[in-house]
Image (cartoon, rainbow, N blue to C red; front, side, top):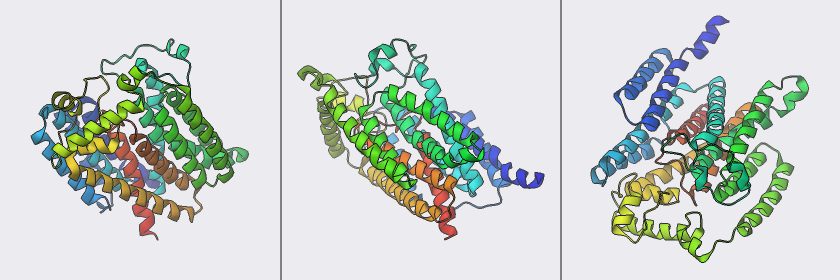
Length: 409
């Protein structure tokens, strides 16, 4: 019994070290210590794991994405900034492949899923102290609530929309686990349900505090998809009606003045202007991009774009095209499409096994990934931020489940 348990947990320190090192590269910049931790984790993982590296459908898009990231460093107006972001992508890719190599059993899928939920809870608990709530818009939560929140403890504080994207990515997974363990309440096995429900509540509260209108709509769409996939069809229909009413209210609740339409970064007029500038920049730098992390600087120097404290194109795909050029956009779009394909196919296959926990893992991961993409159509996401490695964890989990379920087909 003990030997079987040891075989299950033996490779765990390896994947933990790889994720720790990759997170350090993204959070604190590229340092020798961070890469040494990654290398140590990889060595331990390969020694302790009896499996072998697995080919994935996303290998070629990832290779092209890495090549465009290298190219963007050579053309960037701020090479140091672009280099750090490019190395962050490399570290995130290492995390993805290490996770795919390690997670090959339902037990490991559950560990990964709960680890992602824990990350979401940590973000929710840290949000009151690291988010700059003064950048918030008028919205669902009363302004008086924010008067009781402390100022951010970080000089480089997190924008509410970025926090909204992170929570939007991980919240559906917690909700999915909550739904999967719901029947166990009657059997006296409610601990997983209680933990998942508490995690969902904490992340949900922090998500509401962000007052991200685009995030609210994206979250509604992802939760509706999740409820449908988890066979909560009537609840999905009811939630759709509530979401429709909420969307109407959000559209009419705030009416900005003409001046705000031009200067306020939360308005659609500002976004249309940013998107137009981004499109011009893509046309001017179609093959190499302008370099990761340089959009605001280049736009303010070469185009009629006023400097502001809210960087980025407010659109995930435009941002990638500006950063890496059209080849980078093709690579990322291919990665997205293949991830959606793998997630949908894995969901179809695991539903035949009647394993509600595994269905919850793939449905929650896929719903969160779709929600992130929907939010990315109208706002900045975690791309190019210190938390950029977290979506790669979700993609890695989807890929790992797909490869295992497809092999057993």
